[in-house]
Length: 447
Image (cartoon, rainbow, N blue to C red):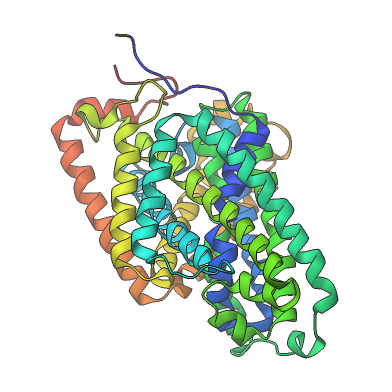
């Protein structure tokens, strides 16, 4: 039997909808309410601030993708080839958890919004329902990236249209008194809100992890990252402003399904049902994309044979089966044990570590790979471009600190487990693995 390869079949809409679909999900419909506990009526400002570190890492991601588009690039390949083998492995290991966590959160968020549907006389147990949702999308993802992208495109376009309707219809019902309430914790509350709301943006750079499944990857991934940032930013700032202007921020923050609670103020039962369905589309598009990219991040970790045997297998649809299975099983564990805010903070910590490594990689490239650097287009070759990764590192370090000691402790434990796995795997075939990790691995698959 010949080798099975990833299939190059994603266009700009596909990559944008997978990327922005990951971003717009539980972030806007659940984490916005949690952030409002800190930022109050200025939650929209937290969203505006939160996009800054994301845009900075977006520039670094595009830089590296133009250098060398490859599956698992941003999360694993660039860090291991440019920065450090063990720290690069930990970048991919951390990003895998950073995708597993949202799988768990979005599954729970879907059930929370299902239970908010008007006229429902029963409540679905959140844990049971979330597990069922996760398993259903596991089956969809087994059928390959094209099936994932078709489902994703439909959910994504409906979601964007629905949030725009929510914003427009809410404008006449805004109240000056609600807008004037400000933040209960002042500027520090706004910054804590921003540090949480990075969760809502954090899937942006994962477009670069689809480098070998994209048609014309340099163009497709670049536009996927740019549009994947711009579309959520506009929708987040607009919807958060309208939400806390229609409803006092404390009521909004305490609601289990906050956007449905706001919709009930001005849209009636039919309108609430509409927003719940929009939330379903947003949450499920996020969940769908997270499973898809999570499996491919794990595939990136496996392709240098740190993991061996059948764990690297692709099925006949080009899906990394064991990566997908591991993503789903750990997500189910988090569903049954974790709280949403703590899981979100751990996830953000993992993303921030990866972003710091990504920025460092950009700073190293000109000296380590001058032949690839010289081929970069436009302003990416300008010396002044390097100010962006420097600022990105400083901002990411500050936001990492804001996640709190408990989230950082759990993140450190996960990283320690990853480091043990790395050294055990590396020691098994040290010479072979070292040689593989010194190579750029595009189009290198396992038989």
